[in-house]
Image (cartoon, rainbow, N blue to C red; front, side, top):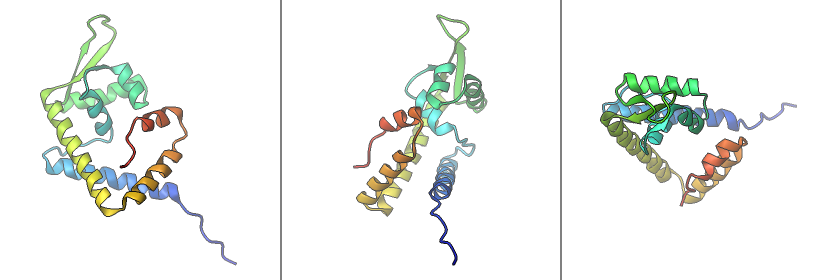
Length: 155
């Protein structure tokens, strides 16, 4: 007797994430920002709130200081960020957005808001609330749960 295949939530979640990132990149490309990188959404929105040391940026992103520095270097090469030695501690590297980086942050936020609105128009409020519950249940790492707890629930 053939066994029914198990539901593959993780596979669907991975596909949804891949498509969401592709939609985000397409929206940014249409707005004259064709070089979107996966780390941009989180790091640019963090830096839009104000300058941060590379180490604290890494902590907020859940990556090592070295990985955060690599992300910052990519932003610098594209003209979106600049890094300076800390005023109080020359070992510290403080990162902030340039004027072009702040413009990129505004467009990025607009594209993300548009994607969220578009999704909310394709499902019911109850379906969106159920999806929110399921996605939060997926999170087992304490730091990921803490970040999710700061995100608003669907209304």
